[in-house]
Amino acid sequence: MEYAELLVRILKMKRQDLVVDWAVAMVVMHRAMRDFIRSKLGPDLVFVVLEMSLADQQERIRKRHKGDEAAVELLKANFEMFEPAGDDEENAIAVKITADMSPEDVVKRTVEMLKNNQ
Image (cartoon, rainbow, N blue to C red; front, side, top):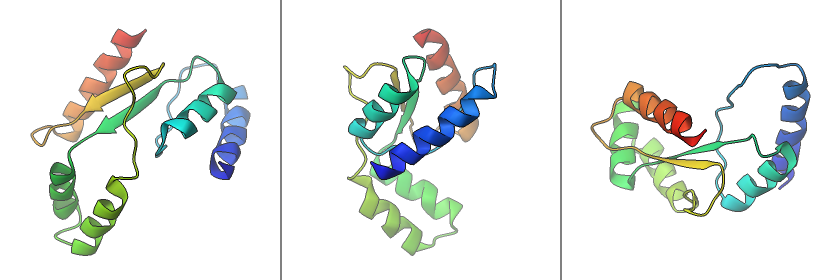
């Protein structure tokens, strides 16, 4: 949790300077870490947890990294360590991504889900 504690300190400092809603793109692998960060930053915090099958992720990584199998193997090694958002997890939105979705589609779905969450 050392990483999460450092992250929380940085976000609290940055938050003081802002008067608008804002987003941070990062990986939070486990619910326990999301719960910890949420407990420190308050109930306004919403996690958007992107979910995609391993096969679809591998295909995207192959395209993005021009067939570099080392990148695919790294993804595969880490895939099982990620915990999806729980149905009972407050302020966590699970965005299910399918192979046919473009990055723009993912953003559109995420924005729609965030609006519905308010």
